[in-house]
Image (cartoon, rainbow, N blue to C red; front, side):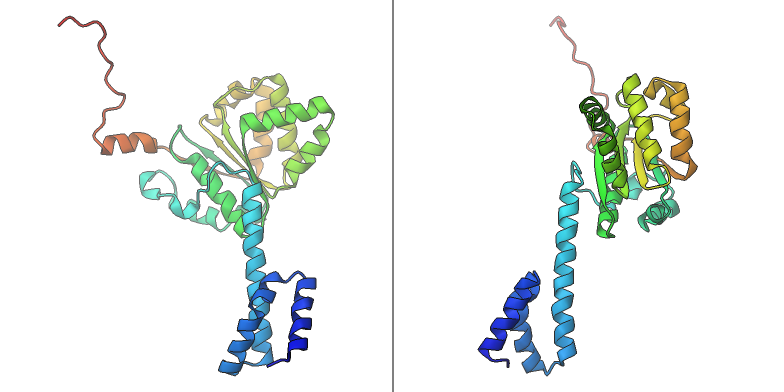
Amino acid sequence: MADDLTMERLRESLLQLRMFTAESIVDSVLEQAVSKDMSFIDVLDHLLGEEVRSRRASTIETRTRLAGFPAKKTIDEFDLSFQPSIDKKLFADLRTLRFVANHENVIVLGPPGVGKTHIAIGLGMEAIRAGYSAYYANSTTIIEKLKRASARGTLDRTLRKLSGYRVLIVDEIGYLPMDREGSHLFFQLVSRRYEKGSTIFTSNKSYGEWGEVLGDNVIASAVLDRILHHSITVNVKGESYRLQARKRAGVPYPPPAKEVGKAK
């Protein structure tokens, strides 16, 4: 076993290198090395391996927090049996994150409550675990962010930041219509990210209805042209999870209307 002075220098060096995990376990690892007759290479491999794992876990935790997910939803938690319309082979391919490596977009279409946001967040969390950066916002929040930046004269900087994420999630397109300024700003964002990153869109509107959502058929056509050039579309055709839960519980939907003022 190393003498006290050597151990002090070792711990100080590890702290100087900001290898805090390795420093915290070095004593126990050296004790194991003596009892198990571990080689120098084995000791070094163990210390560095634990340090790398700790840093990776810390990076994932930080990126997940900064991604702005409204909830932590993993792909493993998504129950395909509730939405059998989803192509299982396509779903499995998305999990490989090949679309991120190829700078392809993913568009998840379907009615409210079928799990579109769950899929988008799950893919975003998978991307973070794989070492990519990701950011989530619903479409209304992103448009408001771009409008504020435009008013402050910082639009280009904001567009650069949003374009820098390897995976950007734009959720809930179509729940609220965009005004003319919003649709133009949305077009600029899509154009900036074109063939440079992967964007996951979710929408309750078919592509044919995006002209109504963006308030301009010409802009909608230009947006879809860029989005769909390199893209994967996931159609979810099923009942909402909430409606399925009500049915399983035997609760009628919609609930029967209460009769008002009925004579006794």
